Length: 221
Image 1 (cartoon, rainbow, N blue to C red):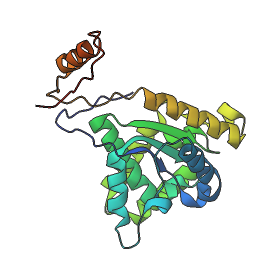
Image 2: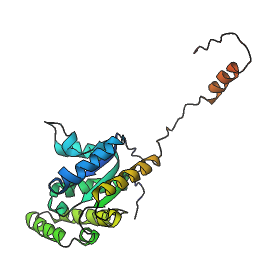
Image 3: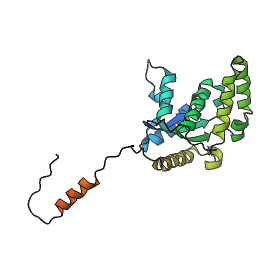
Image 4: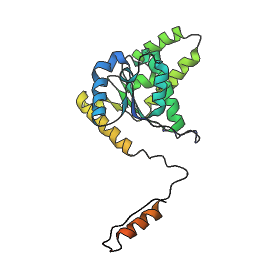
């Protein structure tokens, strides 16, 4: 279900390698913190909202900017993820930019079954029942949340219990290795009008290989 970018006129400005999207109450002080540190230690520039947001700035605008500028988004689905309208709004934006510019997404299922996310049952069903009560006058928003969850859940992702049998340290190590591998395969943007320097380089090489022992001065004209 991978989608190709729908707009060739939009060129992403990648200023960050990875954005972490998560429900803080479920994962922030354990799994997410450990994953964040592991990524940072490997030199992977990672955005984690409670680390990066500055006082006095709008959280919504900062997160939106981070989503637009991140090559990769790791979405950590946990038991209470869907209870947060904030997380769901963020997910909708991530999916939007994935479809627009081909941003890479890696869903992580942290102590939650994949089917709960795809079908919105169990804790996800409870969360959406409350959302329908609270947003009864804006069901379009709820429908967007549902569609974003389904699309994200059908992307290739990892389950903590399937991949590492519940061992978080091994799981984090595998995630970091996967991100490193995928980042290495993201093509660099090539300018429309390239600067041709081959002929100049060849002239310099010829001067250096002319067999002369005299000093050579290379100047720019």
